[in-house]
Amino acid sequence: MTFPFPNYDEMDFYEWNSNTEITKVVHTGDTRDFTTRDINSSYFSFEINLKPGEIKYFAIKIKSEGRINICFCLESLES
Image (tube, rainbow, N blue to C red; front, side, top):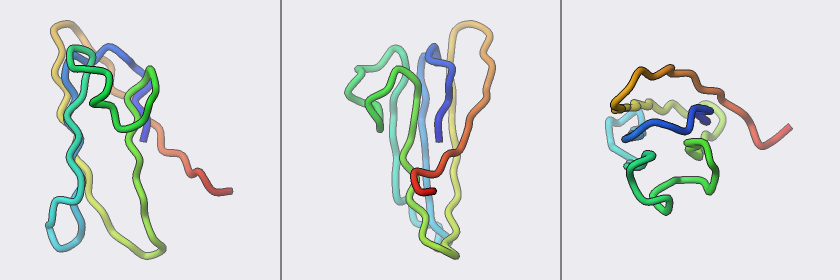
């Protein structure tokens, strides 16, 4: 999952499974250290691993001083 707008001050990514167990939390953003990013990219990208038939839920919390546009894309690494 990639958010192609690199100027979010704070971005928190949450992933949980169908048993409501939190499986991943990432706290990142433009005002946080670059090493907090899930994927080494100038955009905010998060790796999502899904097995066939698996259900996962996601939540994103974005905080920024100015106006923000929120858009994202999902891509598969497999063809």
